[in-house]
Image (cartoon, rainbow, N blue to C red):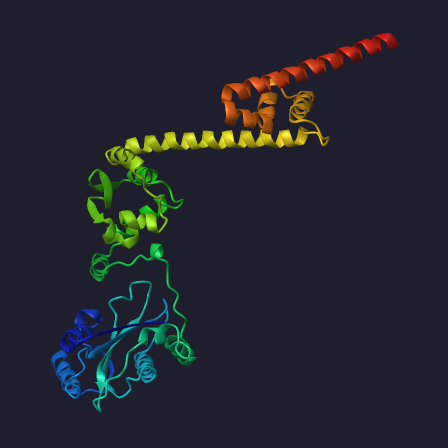
Length: 397
């Protein structure tokens, strides 16, 4: 379970919120699950709260508001929720205060989560102010050796511990959009479709331009809002339905995409590329993606070849303590003897430390000249060895 706490000085506003009929499944049913007050309307309850607050005029912040939410799928009956609020008031010192507790149903479409609200006075029936210093700490973490109030209530009523989802994984329709979905019988709202598309386009934390290309190729329009030549905001549209990034959730704003590691961090060098990409058609974005994928494939193949040649270098490197140049010569000789052609032998020798040092210090031409010279020496040495072997065989005959 999760308990949130707020305080204020507007009893009527709080009571109107607690009794809001739009937060009920049946507007004719009273949302009140328990109370020690006589009133049943927001005005009547607010008047009682004002009366009790007048017992201690020095108190300026007169109202307490607790909200309790439970884990997805955890079903809580009205009597059990009333008992949970009663225990909460005992543990926080509000057992002698006026209170009214309600159950709201407007958020249950968000992962099937049930929740309730409790409004209470900061002054008890004897006119004493209830100290709320460190109350959030007591709720969440415990105080002076006592366990957190949340943990105590969970243990008493066999409730599941609350697990916070990372911001990037939170996808909650507004109450209005959820009701529209139910009324029209939609399988997915535009917001849900955009969530799905953006999640698919960011599964590997791509650069912003790659995310944009993937979305446009999938039929999603992407627009960047610029300030002083730099993108500062982002919006998405599907089938003519536009949503600002913030409308989809804080993780879908221009900054939120980066903070939640859905995309790579932006830098100013990407600005022009993003402008060009947002103006491409879906077909042009698809063609760009094909070119990008072909380039990635070439890079993977090149990386695999480089690793293959490094492995061959290690395979052919002699265990004897030789100078780097002599070692490269022996590597080249063994590679040629193992039926590698001259070009492959060049690549194998180029994987060694001497060639790599030349590459970094003097450039590609110097490194290439070195590996060609080493390979040619190895070819000459093998030819000499073959000639000597042939002459030896003739003498024996």
